[in-house]
Length: 446
Image (cartoon, helix red, strand yellow):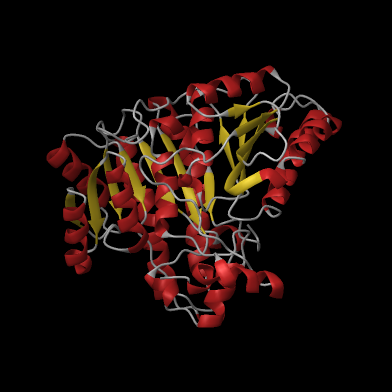
């Protein structure tokens, strides 16, 4: 659905009026377009560690215009704040305040990215305090940025270099238009697995990907995006959505599988279809989901059980079949669609919140089961996304939901799909068990 308010205040007279009246001032976000520059403008790499030098060298290898010191009033496309060597909260002052002096020089839709260490791997309380402090400062900074700029962070375990494959993969994702609606979030890199794709325009080339709930909305956007990035698509949805499903499958030149994923044999049918039609199975995206909203006082067993069956029990059952299959052992990827409702809760959605919270728990637990054969499992948690479902919300509620995030607007199905495509790629091989929120830094509970 079109956000007419954002269109109105993005430029010209509408922008001036919104500013004078103190109204929200969302801007058109820089989203990924094939062939577009990774970053629009010079990139300032701030930090005096060897890790900062390594990051700057890597970015030069990408053909970016890299600065180690800011030039006066030069519009910057990104600031990368490398804090991998901080050992005490006092160590944050110099690099952070130095970066702060350049914030006014950020171009519209610029990026700020921190690279630091996980607090859990710290060896001293002071080190843990400094590292956790970066969490608070990054999320706070993301709420200060304007004009579509975002701030996100990369966390590394102590034994990982700042230029480990998935660290660079996450950095490329955060710098690019693929992360337009990801704000105030962290990705943790826990291993040296992964590789930077030889073709950044087709990072999923040669992969076969299953997408459930693919007939419309976010699922259709996922299928289109994974196809654009080189994957062969198996589009899955219920028989009642057969016409829409066939249209999506034809559009992405994949195959359609009409299937109720809550069936006991759904996992085996998915594997058999992918292998028989395409010879392999590399990626499974658990997108299918339903809502049956009611206040808990009015909730009946049918509404509760149907949501649990589709949104989490089906994923658990399919994953059991995948983990047992010899056809899902070559560095496979599972990406599940959770929700900020599973993190922060939402009135009238106890069943939905339970199911999406369950997805998050499943992902964190299953990561260890994927590790022996180089596999990963992660989740994305969308916030307010412009879909047919949200278009039916009452006007006042819809407008409030759109503005209650740092970017002051709703996300697009493409934003969810871009995050999933990254997590499904070889570049994310060192990232597993993570939940990445695609919510524009939702201001309530997430």
